[in-house]
Image 1 (cartoon, rainbow, N blue to C red):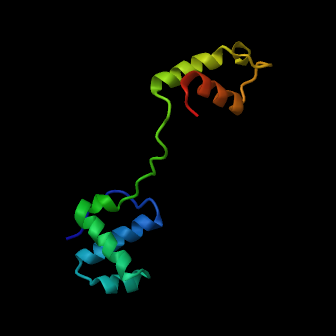
Image 2: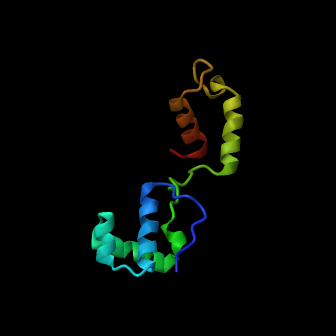
Image 3: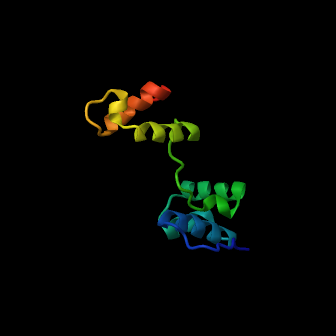
Length: 113
């Protein structure tokens, strides 16, 4: 019994996890899989446990989510309006927005650093 994978693996780590799962389902022992793929038996055990808990989908690559946005969608839209008014409207000398100025504006208007 093998897990159907409709897409190509995204990277070599995903390929290795899927290969471990396929070999396990074919009846190979964990140590045999570890030797064949150059991994430790503990790593193989973790991959198999992950697949048992979440199925073959748990072994697929998932893009890291990154940091949670600190501004809401409404605040971002409001920020764009403020930036369109120009830097001089907020007391800066010269009508140029720099990263430091935008950060200062966000801290001043939204209390977010």
